[in-house]
Image 1 (spheres, rainbow, N blue to C red):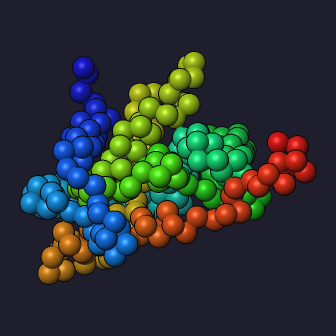
Image 2: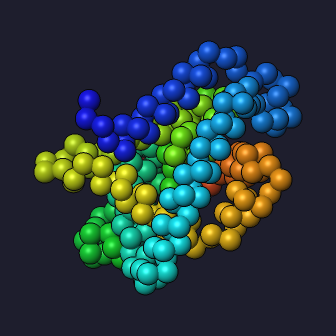
Amino acid sequence: MKFTPRSLIIVASLLSAALLSGCASRTAEQKASGEIYDPYESTNRAIHSFNVGVDKALFRPASKGYVTIVPEPMVDSFNHFADNLSMPSVMVDSLLQGKFKQAGIALARFTINSTVGFAGLADPASDFEIPEVDTDFGETLHVWGFDEGAYVELPLYGPSTARDAVGVVVNLFTNPLDYTDPRPADNLGLYAEVVKRMGDRGRYSDTVDAILYESADSYAQSRSIYIQNRRFDLEGDNTDLYITPDEISTEGF
């Protein structure tokens, strides 16, 4: 198989998912208490140390240089471009979750930003007051009733859970753009996401540095922040994004 950044993430995510399958799920008591399930802490800490080393040697200086050299409007444009490329996947996952309104919003944003927005480099959809939406296959699994499973840290990718690690792999293959003819350049979405992450890393450098380099235990700190934010995102779903049976009959869906 040709080695690509995508294949590296696939291997890392599959290894994490394999770890989950070899260990029992959270108990009912752990779920009720909200306790973080981390049976692979020693392995996770080793991967975290590797990720911090990569960040310190490569990603941190590159990100700071990126936001220093590249004008802020261009950084915004690259972020819009990455977000726009993700909209087809967001639409697919929204449909799988039964969020038909959200799927329609994702399609509308992609259509408008890909045309009026110069291939996604601008965000006229927001000017038209079309809300931003985001989801992934990890959230789809959550909607389907799968437990988050063990906490895992993926090489280069960062904090995750076993459920979300599976979602990372699936989302690499569920973007309809990958099956168009002619299709975009290989790994274009992945490269765009890396550039977006560089922009975010550079812009929020002080906060990230405080977590990774100034906290007493950067692993525990990043784990707690990720799990709390992820659980809030998943449990705080906006019910307005679902279509009720009454709306189906009245709106003609």
